[in-house]
Length: 79
Image (tube, one colour):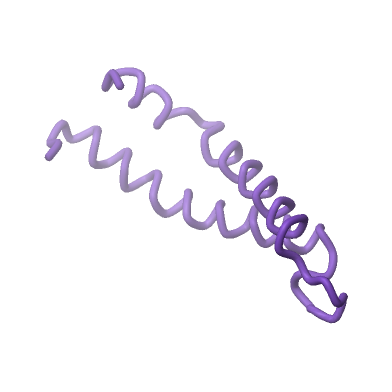
């Protein structure tokens, strides 16, 4: 991948919200394929809860990793 394209995507202001929406989608897929079958699970009972958890976890991970990547690639030192 070209470095300039990667830096352009990395500095996009919509990257973290987009990744959060992807996490919401993965939360729904988790509920659909591996969700609670008995209906007694607190976190996996409804798809909205797993979607919320997926979105929040993805947001937290992206919000901590993206600034680190921005700093790493803006310094020009790559390994």
